[in-house]
Image (cartoon, rainbow, N blue to C red; front, side, top):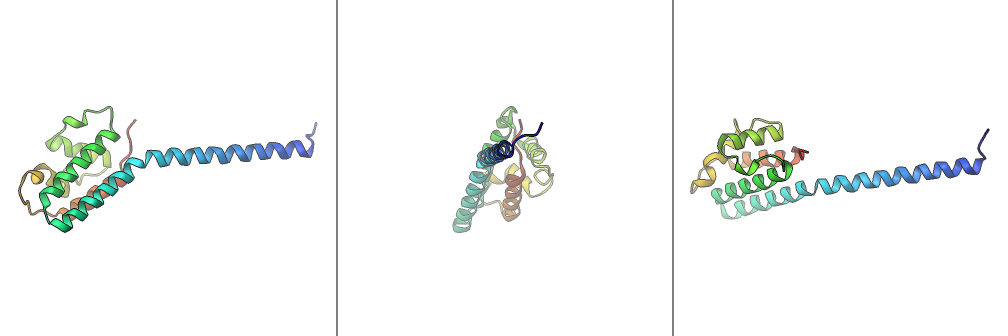
Length: 141
């Protein structure tokens, strides 16, 4: 038994509308999930701009440390991230970001840098590392 042409045409239209609706819903979900990333990157840019204006490395490092901590608590809500410190904290950042540059690279500044008046470290490399981490880290479910 064959369907009349108008019935077939209305089914194709219904499928097309359903497909467009599904794509729109997926786009909204993606946009909402990435909201934390956009906000974190904006805050990192503001911290970097303030550093360029003031030249205070300790303030930049403290701000980056706080930004990473807030972001980590967002991406890993079921892990005790807030209590991590020292090398355990850097290893968490490495694991979450799929890197080893926090524990073995410029991220090591975070161990003592925020607590020194003017640490004199390569903060540019740290800013690039944090930017890369923020762009690639995924929310853990």
